[in-house]
Image 1 (cartoon, rainbow, N blue to C red):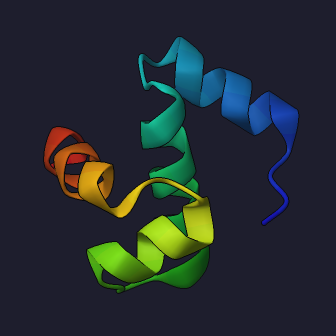
Image 2: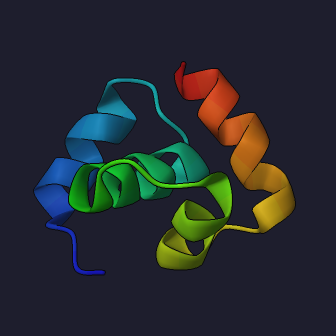
Length: 57
């Protein structure tokens, strides 16, 4: 998944960590998805994707 670096920087400036940025951009590109699908798209460990999604809630 290709994400523009200025968008990533803005999300990090907003306070998101690297995993949150990856999951958030995957969610924006994919829409409604399971945590497993998002972790695969975002290249985030599946075990962390649940925590990340909860923190974004």
